[in-house]
Image (cartoon, rainbow, N blue to C red; front, side, top):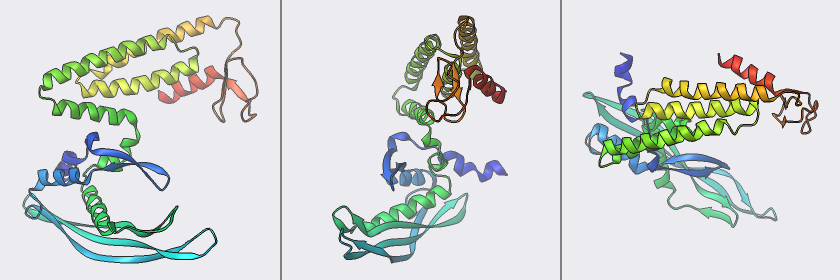
Length: 289
């Protein structure tokens, strides 16, 4: 039953990176989805808009906000927010479903030039509400789940979509596999450039995560890739341990992460106690087991 309940979600939850862009909202970067792309995805699942699915505006209003003042404290206008409640209906397996959600857009807002009115606010609120309704059904769920905050995930999605769009999928896969093998060779050389054990552990974790994800995308056995990288990690770890000799033990601050290859006892950044980098490395290894 759970597979049947998630059948729609499983078909639409992944987003093509070509139809996204990074935008700044309230001082933070978010991933914005092209609304026409989401409409196309809905049409692919249910049929043309107005036949297999559609929407109606349940409520629309302008909500007053706080005052907008100039540098002298004079009130220029009041902020106004446009709010729209949308009902989206669709047909799935012979049954009709409905989802409601709000869309919001500043109509009168503060800018560096003073008060500004956005005459496209109703249109933007409609788009906002439509995207939110579709997201409740699983459309582009990978973005709303935060997976697009991880560059490795986005890169793998690009590879998958590039293969789908290719005129010759076999050639595209072969090219992607060649690039992957070159990446692995480069990373194997990179192990030898890491100068200390703490850095080696971090390098290995990052490399292993990216390599296994890409291997799965290209139908390459992730376990074989992991073993190859793991063997090189073990070899380099043994090399570094043998090179230590009488050298000072590198230390790391457990409070802020500052690394001191000269073995200082007190952190120069936050003045907390430093511990041997090997202990931090071994602790991470114990947590990963």
